[in-house]
Amino acid sequence: MLIYHGKLHLTVKNNKNKQMKYYNSNTIIYLNGQFEKAVNSSTDLYGQSLHYGYAAFEGIRAYKTHNGNRIFKAAAHFDRLERSCQLANIPFPWDKQELIAATYKLLQLNKLKDAYIRPLVFCHPNMKLNEPSGVSILICAWEWDAYSGNKLLKLTVSDYERPNPKSIPMEAKLSGNYVNSILATTAANIKGYDEALLLDMHGFVAEASGANIFLEKDGKLFTPSLGNILPGITRATVKELCTVLDIECIEKKLTTEDLKNADSAFLCGTATEIAGIASIDDIVYRPLWRESLGYTIQRAYKNLVLEKVNYEVII
Image 1 (spheres, rainbow, N blue to C red):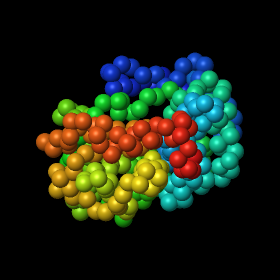
Image 2 (cartoon, rainbow, N blue to C red):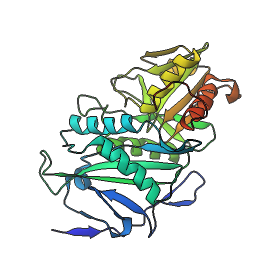
Image 3 (cartoon, helix red, strand yellow):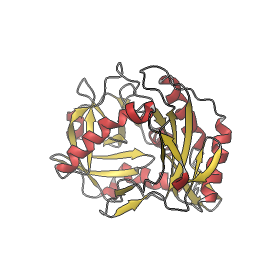
Image 4 (cartoon, rainbow, N blue to C red):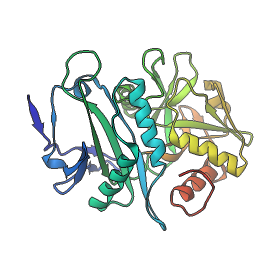
């Protein structure tokens, strides 16, 4: 068995074009029930996850609040991780409450308060295109600001489309699905845009590469209906906030014409949080973001995750 010993020092460029390092020599990860140093961890190079993208993952945030360190909607995220595995025929033999407890312990060991958390279920060695021979679970965490930064975003409608849900379950957060997102984002960045907006195979608005979209029109919010998009946990939270704030929110099939007619727009996701949209190609939205419903939602969301206000939304 060929084993790779994990001395990868993974770096990426963040929004300020600085190199970001995900871990160092002291970073602790959780792997199959054990806490160990990231630099001492290993994985097999003959697994289906590495070769075929056959893995399921989650993106979760923890926040420093006046009530202590809190993982936002931890149960919902681990429920979705289990659901993703079920949809992809990947076994999920773990107790979710134990995983949540382990995640809090992981944050403590790494002295992290505001953090991004990545659980990953990956498959054991198997070069065949069939069910996994076994699975492992990794949980890691690092400090990460809002994925898209704090500026208003410039989007472009991508030439890439979201996959047909008859080819792969779109409600599952699977590693292989994100090749589509990487291609769309890379193409958008090359053209000078911050983010890509993808349509579905019927030409309706789907979502951004890693976030859901909401449009504002005449004092109401609109968002694409489920079916060809990832049912985001932040998307669900925005809908809950709309109920609390008495903002009408409508799910429907949205067209590119709806993009043109909207008064404002924003993206939402765990990594993105709430990010306003300045423009989509040649469509420019109102310059005063603070006057939009998106800004109202952005403030309410931040207060919710920081537990500054009790909106009676399940956390």
